[in-house]
Length: 224
Image (cartoon, rainbow, N blue to C red; front, side, top):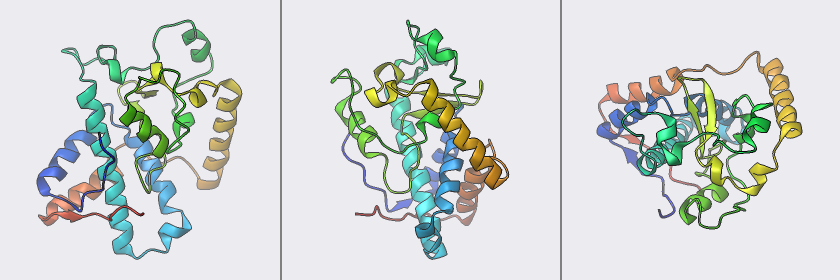
């Protein structure tokens, strides 16, 4: 995979495909909505003209959908469609650390609300170099959570698509760090009056409006 460039526009066909991907039970809609909520409150974003803000939001959605499709293509689910049949879309693997991690981890996904990290992987061959690059650089301007964070809406649990091969910075994130992140979220919820919705309503309405207009949607070019 080469370094991505944001496409200049989304056709109606691509928008229809995007709506289908949004409905996939593994697509992290909840975290995308949190992403857009954080982006919308940043001063630099709020100072942009409305047209530019809309284009930036559409670019973030398009890039996230494009990346999600790549994850699905690499780790296709088996006939039963279960997570355990998808090597590249697996949650916590059975192992000596699983019971210890499960003792404090409730799969909220907050530990992965970071757009990039230091790509120090214990196995230099896994995941592929292109994916290690994406982990280190993130998906681009406007993204606010890890590219490998997914969310199973059936179980309402988040998981890492590359947990077995996760980098060392993620491995040292344990119970104390987990508690700190959750306390910070509680402070945030007190300030904002509650967490964003857990459905695809916000993103879905935006894409549906674009479809009703019957024309392609222009996207903001990536910032240099």
